[in-house]
Length: 217
Length: 217
Image (cartoon, rainbow over all chains, first blue to last red; front, side, top):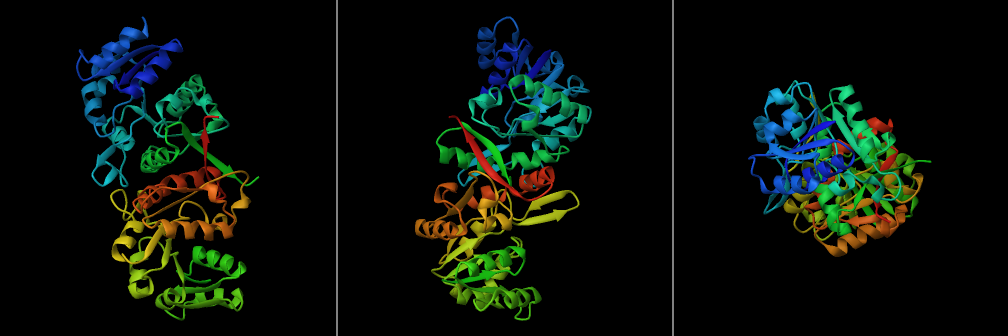
């Protein structure tokens, strides 16, 4: 499959490398064609790894992943172009973190989310919020952790969510570990977990953890 | 120990009954002395269960628990009286949930929290945020769930947090299951998990679950 990734940071590169290793064609998109991180990634990704502008990456992909920071995602997707997103599965991995003197806040947060904003601004894209609740090394290798742990998806289009579960299955996620939180407003719920996640990273001392749940037996 | 509980709802009653069963003296406080829920609870709680006003409950307690809804907690604690909270451990169990036509939001949320507001308004109280991340039936009976699962505390006073861990130990929580998220700004992190928790309750179909974590082995 051809996959366009918006964003050349560590999340975009990690997802891109995994997808190439799985046999997909990937274009990592950045603001300008001469983005150093994008070029460096493509240089080591082999013949199936490409780099280009946001628009080129989105046009290339049958599926598009948003791996930009949540506070700049809308600007990046506008640059990618609504015409290159229409009808496509758009997996939104972003979190709108703002690190300020009083700690981390979300922009937007509480009454809105990046996932919802993207779906509102690009109504023809089939937006699924996913993967924004754990470190990117774990996104593409859930077996690094012992036992069942969970991912959360949210989106308005059931087929888009099913396609997302299938792609996550290629990463190693059993379908039964993926919790469907409902429509795209569920993005708000998972984005709002980030302040807690950051505290837990402080507690554990590293990002090598994920959520699980205990139930009555 | 004498414990004052601010709030006569199901959370306050559940905590009160457990504390009485553990041998503590409990006064459940409500806005007016003739609160039906408070009187009904005291009527079945035995000689160690009392009811009174917010101020009477706070004055009674060597430790005070805030079990009101987060959007009304400050008003309730003002009625309880700063002079009855000064120097005491004040365990804040609240979440500021607002159920609106577009779903649940927090008031305050994202840039502030009930826990922080309480500590700011009552600087002489030793506020610890705790127990606001799970159903009250599990707060007082963690053994209902199989395996290790976690609680989170936040507060500025290390001794107050140690006293909280000791009290939670009486409820059945091993100290090792309780994660210290740092100062009272950690309250923001756990209060912001509530929209997610509500989605997970929808997923599971009931409130009989709690958070756990997976780590690399």
